[in-house]
Image 1 (cartoon, one colour):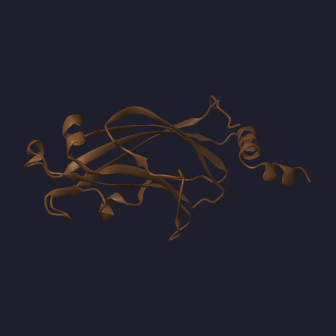
Image 2 (cartoon, rainbow, N blue to C red):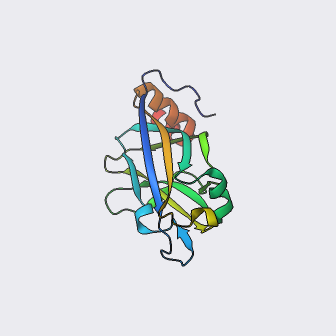
Image 3 (cartoon, rainbow, N blue to C red):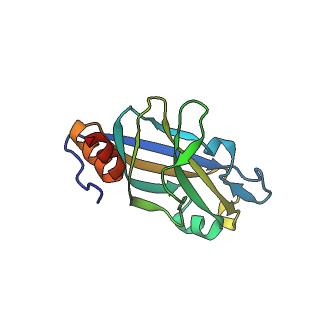
Length: 176
């Protein structure tokens, strides 16, 4: 069972990301989000022994939702990752990328993430391809704007409860 009550003293951390896709880069006639500027985008630096609850995601863009949906060639997605240390290998916070089939307001994510190290970072990658349609002629770049609601919880009791819920072997080892 995952704890469902966020402590009243949790710190709200609003995060935002703008991912841009230039026309004809790198594919002719398309807008690609899979470019270096849309990978490893930092959201926050983890504080040691602190839990983060990624609550929700809102998505909008600089074209209408109808135009966005009509132009999808490869479904855009966002991936949340924890970058371990400096130059470390990122590991996914979610098992799969989160698809963005349409714009969304307060899409529930409800995932906890944690690190014991001070140099770890929460990062995101955005990918996907849009075709140019008549309504997007002359528009470059096309942007997706992500607003992410995150709560930081460093309450000692909450940390211990989370550790017990997430890892029974951890709590058993602590009791010995």
